[in-house]
Image 1 (cartoon, rainbow, N blue to C red):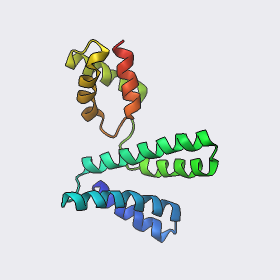
Image 2 (cartoon, rainbow, N blue to C red):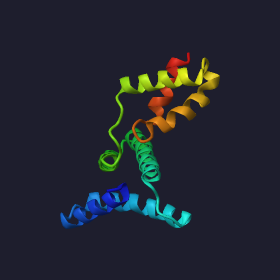
Image 3 (cartoon, helix red, strand yellow):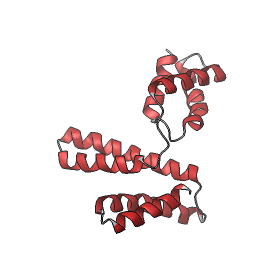
Image 4 (spheres, rainbow, N blue to C red):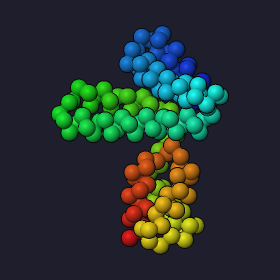
Length: 147
């Protein structure tokens, strides 16, 4: 079962169980996917759906940070719950140790030796960890190793 089918099935299940919050979160994600499918005039594959899910989580994490900074606890709580729901559809996240190993390997593969070559490392690194690691963590790890 691909990700789009899984989202559809979970949406149906949320309707049956009357879980309004989960239902609305899945509907938001599905509408983003559907809009892109309409724009591209084709169905999206799992990698493209993963990109959308990662982007949705990133947007919510940014919003969460702003809500917490502004003291909006009720919005922060609902945003955290949305992140948890969407994260269920992403592959298992890499640990910090796994990220460090992959970053070191990629730096060796690209031959990068300074921060000026960070873009080259990130370009090679992102396809390896697609959907399994946060971009900010990767960026910090690369900076740490290229000092």
